[in-house]
Length: 343
Ligand SMILES: [Mn+2]
Image 1 (cartoon, protein in one colour):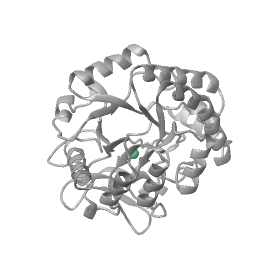
Image 2 (cartoon, rainbow, N blue to C red):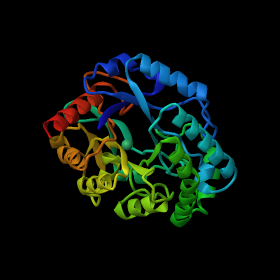
Image 3 (cartoon, rainbow, N blue to C red):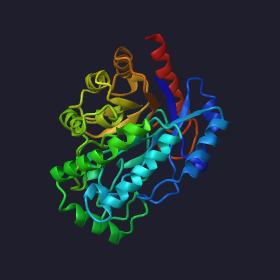
Image 4 (cartoon, rainbow, N blue to C red):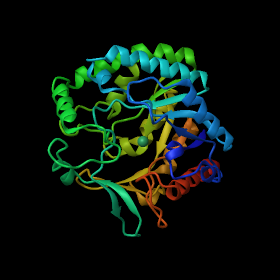
């Protein structure tokens, strides 16, 4: 396996040199952030980012994410044009030596939490999702917005999107995802890239919008949409693991054995009795997921893809992007590297 670290480009307050000083880190996973969703990424910006990363002594082989335009998920509007742009981006990434591309197919909202700085008993802060708070959130009428959500939507655009999705149920979303995959998988097979879909986070419908990358039955269905190794998963332990019906240790073993896990996001979550959850330190006793067994499953199935420590808490007075500080993710990376070495 290769341990990598998410880096948000030159705007990230964490310098590449700091990331390089974490002993187990092979490279960073990043994206081109200044291109509107739906447009193709230029070869120049891809190679410029690669040059910066390699100059810092790190590898750049994984993208997270190439965002999928809502028109593709809705199967309407400029869908065909945006799929062609997506293919162009993939071909350029392949030429630049990228091996894995992470993406998701969640309507409108990316990961969702109800609080980003919940203070834990040890004084650190973490991202949490409390069901009672989630039930009272209304993205159309309230004033709230959360990082991870596309802040560029105006209220009117949000209303239009919700209206458009009122005609897209889960089956329609499946069929739009199938169409997208049948278009792009042949392209990545030629470009040497493996696609790795990220599960929905949390893995259940929110605000009445459909979500389908949620559980074993649906992951099986997803992989059969196009039965190619290039059509694979970003196995996000924390996303799938916040539904206690998902046995993440068994599932990661199953899909890694099938050679369909190309990227693993590893973090721990503490599940609460009502299905709410708090993100916790990676260390197994801090949460509900057995991180050691996750890594054992990967090791025993010959996993040779990429792993990154997922969200961390804010510790030691660090401030910055919630979930993406340096210190706790560095602890998580070294903890996992230690387990891997011992295995
Ligand atoms: Mn993740």
